[in-house]
Image (cartoon, rainbow, N blue to C red; front, side):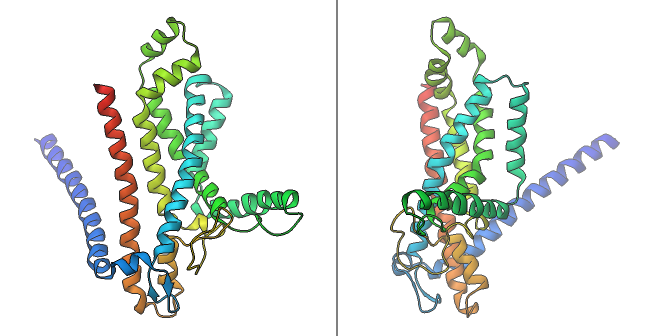
Length: 298
């Protein structure tokens, strides 16, 4: 009797926690939509900020966020996938080197985002950019300053553990029999990985990309020192340009605006656009993953 009561109590507590989580998400999203929807207009989406950041639109922020996520994914997802392939397919999982690599990945996953921003400023901007300027610009300041390239490298480093862990897990789920059959037919290890293993875990690679986009699109701390601009109404002219970003724009509106109350509509509208952009990128990757999964089943 006591066991039944405890079981029902446990089920009720877990259901209550699940309901509370869903309710919190719905309340947050509902508040953002309710407060931000009146601000959304074609002018708001296609114009630059103006009137001392209390008017205008957020078009440069949208473009900057999209470019940041795109470049970050192009840099981080391949590197994370290759690292996961090496850990899963080439090196002994119990070797000292593999343990050190996994320790490094786990350590990266636990480092606060602001530390990545400081590292990006010191390593990418000062060291990397300064080295490029010394070689190609004869010491003139060009790459040794915050820009979208260094911000993307910093964000790629931030999301690297997510990609590595998710892809490595997907690689482990591929049956060993498929590898053995491919090797038995005369294929090399690389041919087995390229033509057998990767096609069967492509959905896992896309899952890593989805998680990376979700993590990177909303982070502000790493780009504070590496590329984000307070006010830059024009679009980035190249990889060496600074940029505006939706998350950083919300932070500025909420903390640095001369009239915070006057910018509440912009804050909620920008947050709604950021959520919509993140959801759109995620849903695109999810749709592609589902399509590949259906094709693999057929």
